[in-house]
Image (cartoon, rainbow, N blue to C red; front, side):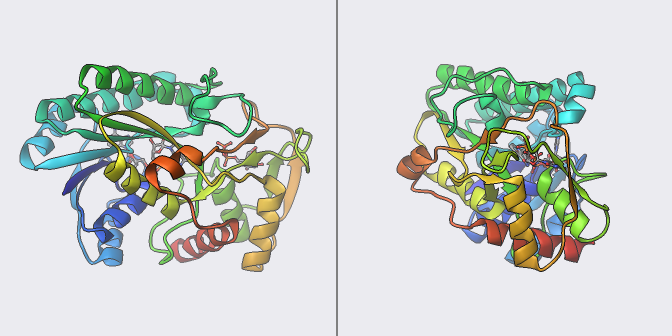
Length: 330
Ligand code: NAD
Ligand code: UDP
């Protein structure tokens, strides 16, 4: 079975390609390399012993995408391609709306044209906005403070409306919580360009001495230690969630939270990272980051019940694997 993975050289996409190839799927990657490197294809081949096909193309380019669909007997699509920096999305809203909405519509149109029935979409827990934790799939979505989050909510709507008109399609909207960690080989992982926005890559760069100290954004939240709580999930668990969705979902639209169901505060993550990896993380508490919620974790019951999937790796493994990748990748 051949799967098209858009954004397949990116962080989550590359780990999912490893899981797909190791499970016997054939893989075609489409990526414009705006936030990843071509060498990731070699790394995937090195890990799995199987080389995915690679197209350097833009998912918003309808004719380029058509070429791929017409050349290969694609049976399912996992659509990771997208821009994901929250702050940048406030600076460049149109770039974000154009890229994230148009790429989703183009790839979906080609699925419909070529009779590809399985579509898995990378959504985000950000669509819940300020809500009661744990977040449950049935909750009413709240407005987001940034265009990035809006693109995810809008893509969910576009996919749901299209699927209603094409009842033969199976669409999974996977709401990721906070992906961290790396493949245990240390060959692939998250490599942000410039100064990281997210906590774990910031910590690994502080650990390596690239950045002098971590700024903890707020210690006055209504949480046990005052710092923000998130549901960190190992990227390999997240990857296996995609295979479960691809394999288990029937026709219709299916929304799943992919998280661990467990919240960890910023200070807890720092302490665990220091203990597991025997390094010091100098940090300073500063003011809150605008737009941050106090706490965010998943109700994972639906994914467990309907996909038979759950995350198995803990915070220690996430810290260990993130650090290994940072050390190997420099
Ligand atoms: P990433 O930036 O590492 O990967 C995305 C990939 O898509 C990159 O390789 C980039 O070059 C490619 N890309 C972007 N626009 C493209 C286009 N128009 N055509 C072709 N390729 C394009 O990001 P990631 O962390 O792997 O995230 C993958 C998906 O998951 C994104 O849609 C993201 O919004 C979503 N997501 C990520 C997180 C997270 O914390 N990492 C959380 C929730 C949702
Ligand atoms: N955070 C922090 N310092 C940083 C980056 C993040 O204190 O340099 C905090 C942030 O306020 C949040 C948590 O770490 O409470 C996770 O942030 P991240 O950006 O990784 O994920 P998101 O906020 O998108 O869930």
